[in-house]
Length: 75
Image (cartoon, rainbow, N blue to C red):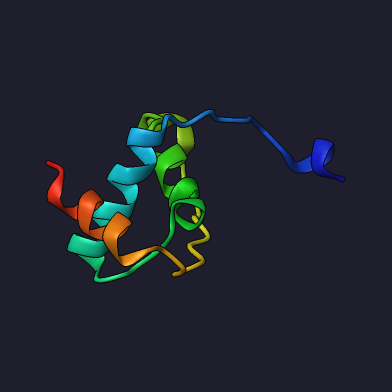
């Protein structure tokens, strides 16, 4: 079933996942763990014209407070 609906697999570096976690926290007031923000990281890695209209499922807020603080401190 996945082969019928999957268009592409996107590999996302850890830094891009952290960037997505930071963006969600600071711009959208949403706290997600890395796995929960990976769909946004993948979408942001693609040019808008290539990804078209997309939906990102954001889930999981079980991120360690120290890890989140470290991600938010990075710029």
